[in-house]
Image (cartoon, rainbow over all chains, first blue to last red):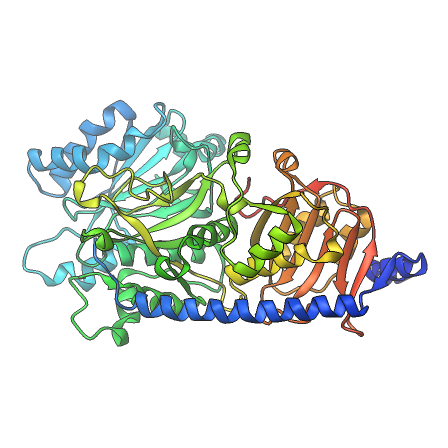
Length: 65
Length: 508
């Protein structure tokens, strides 16, 4: 007989049934997520600035030794 | 013409090679001696004393033949087209063993690699792959692959990293670095092919306004272009822009098991050196390394403010003051140097004050999330309130890139994880590559243990709404993003201690 296994779904269901799982949708959790999103957007923009500047600098550097 | 074989020991190698270089490459005794003493001797001085050599000649080497037909044969001076091949064994070798099938396995077990000598006097060292076990000092971790070769018509296999010296005409350090990167990846993954010198030159044709050979070197931009042409999603990092963070990011990629092309220079200090080497690994991590590890001030102002507010200290594996394994075409393979002194092994005063100024990462093209942003994200996630890390805690963090296949394979075999957490991760859909942050402490990491992990999607550069979070867990909780509601779910589960992942460099 065929056996169907999905341990992940079973674990999720069990943790919810036991009251050990919680959806993080409180105003505090949402505010924290928005703050993280904002910070990561800025981090990404800062990285892009550095990456572009690195590329420009690299185009001028000759390796000969 | 027939193939001649010489079998000899380490004390005999100087005499044998000087005779051979003189006779086979048609140079004077004096030049042959100089070639040995100035170029070859330094390689064999680092060998285990009981190494045995098998020398075969003439040998047709595919890399040198490519340079020969595309360049050396077009000169008036007669260049030889054959090479000499040296093979290394850890035990005594006899010619009859190669014809006795009962002894082949013993021979294969003692095989430690090969080195080609090409007739490009004085830069004679061509393609070579040497197992670290051949060296007196081999207590380090580095990326390696398996390479096939033959000795006396019998097939052998060696595990190591490819190395060659530059011939200064068809390949300088820049081309040699690209060649070695391609040899490594081609031997490991079917999607890459080796790049012979003429292939590298051809790939750069459209990016060169001037004559390409004899090579006058490449600019860093061209190196990035060549790697991209050969199938990589190349990234570049410059010291000028990443400042002190450069070494940290470089270390993250090394911990991820990626060989990097590192550009070294002293032009900013008044010199004229511009050199490329490969960084392929690092020394093993000792308890002293961990004890001496200091908390570095976080460069990012926002992250630094959160750390201060929460009074949490993060000590980063990538800040450990350790030696890194360098493959330099001017020096014997696997040199150990600190990143602050990348040419410590050079005696020439022209090389003083050299520093790492750029490095190139040959990334798999579908890895869209690079190291510096991935690290910031993992550290920030860790500092969120839901992780509930007590004030005053010191955390050791180790962040690396790996394939989900390798990570899941390690996890499936590792019984130190909480079984539910392990099954939860194993059944999670993942992209081909993931960023992993392992959370530990100064005490636990000495036992190669962690108490938390954050896994994020390396194909997702957008880091908003927890879209790239696959799973995270620390101490009493683990988190994931629900597929339907798209909200973060917190689960109470005591994770306990578990083994760290060491598959990238086969150690820590």
